[in-house]
Each structure stands twice: as structure tokens, then as C-alpha cells.
Length: 203
Ligand SMILES: Nc1ncnc2c1ncn2[C@@H]1O[C@H](COP(=O)(O)OP(=O)(O)OP(=O)(O)O)[C@@H](O)[C@H]1O
Image (cartoon, rainbow, N blue to C red; front, side):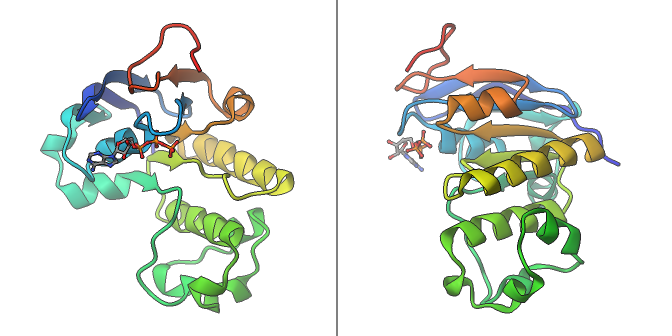
């Protein structure tokens, strides 16, 4: 079992931010802002995928003091539109993922389908399975249910909640759906259209 506390201190990507966040093990921070405000850029900065200012820490250890591949394995970014390197999902897994597939109502036959034949919702759920199969300590989720119907949204929300509890992991969940963030997150960070934190809820 892992147990992770994630902090971002003075995190900025260009003119977006700076923001400070502190998410304890087992918790989820909801992040909401208008389209184009910079949510994806901030998540990518947290995963150390793009140039940024400020510091991120995992259990007090700065990203600067950890090899980048290790940081990115432990602090996993799930993109809104998943990228795949091989022809089929199965080639992206080095361990069993049946329980995760079951939890998201995906059949194991889908593992051998060409990626481009999966529906957008199947691809989005398969990308989440791929992320969780590597047991990261921090989940950076960029609109993880954007392509899903209500039943599958519920499945994803339940799976993430169970994962956070079981692994004592933490999560930052980006969504435009404020009602969803109220369900899944224990705290909220709202940004304005310029990527600056709002004290009061802003649209
Ligand atoms: N690497 C980059 N360098 C400079 N600007 C960028 C870069 N990537 C994205 N942008 C710009 O930064 C702004 C924020 O983009 P971002 O994708 O983070 O928005 P978002 O809040 O996630 O939006 P949405 O809700 O529509 O997905 C956009 O104007 C985008 O064009």
C-alpha cells in the first residue's frame, strides 16, 4: 500500500498560476475553470511533462530531487484524449488488469482490438485501466468521464474512490461538471478565465 501527500508550491505555466495546493493521502482535489483557462497545462506541469515554475513534492520530496521517469510513474497524468504507442491495448500492459476491466465493464476481448476500433468511451475507460494498473500514488485526471454516459460515469467515480482508499493515493480531478466535483472531491480549486485562483466560486 502506498500513502502519498502531494503539494504544489508556486506552480505556474506561463501566465497561468501561480497556485499552491496540498492534497493528503486518500483525498481528491477538484479543479474547475473555464475552457482555455489552463487546467491541462497545470496538470502537465504537476506531472513534470512541460516547462513550468514552482515546485511539486511527493511526501515532501521535490520533483527536482527525483529522476523524471520515477516521478512520472508515481505522479500519473491521464490525458483527456489518451495517447497509445502500440496497435492494441494489451501491448500496453505488463500485468493483469482483469479486476480493473470488470469494474469499468470492459471485456478482456477489447484488449486485442485495434485501438482505433474502440469507441471513444471505451478508449477513455481503457486509458484509466492502463493508468491504474501501474499503481501510481497521485492521479492527475483531465476530464476522465468526458465521453461517458451516466452509468459509466458512476463506475469511474466508484473505481477512483476505491483506488484512493485502497492505495492511500491522492487525486486532482479536472472537470467542467461542478456537481461531479462536489461528489468526488473533498476540496475545490476554482480558477478564473486567466488561470488565476478565485476565492469565491467564479464562472
Ligand atoms: N505548451 C503551451 N505553451 C503555450 N500555450 C499553451 C500550451 N499548451 C496550451 N496552451 C494554451 O494555454 C491555454 C490553456 O490551455 P489548456 O489546455 O490548459 O486549457 P484548459 O483549461 O485545459 O481548457 P479546456 O477546458 O478547454 O480543456 C490555451 O489558450 C492553450 O492554447
